[in-house]
Image (cartoon, rainbow, N blue to C red; front, top):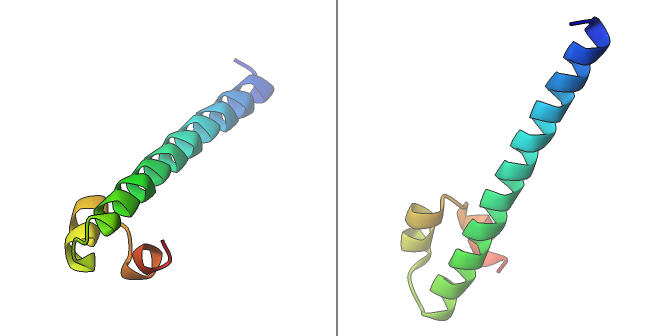
Length: 59
């Protein structure tokens, strides 16, 4: 495997990981929105979604 192939493989892996992380974040935000609509406390939303208080309050 040449250096170009190695770099390309690493870039692709990084891109996949970033995409997965972004998808998880979007899912957490969607769940937090629903929890907030139901009137659940911010502390509980934070516990279950892993979002920060600031992120939750912006929803």
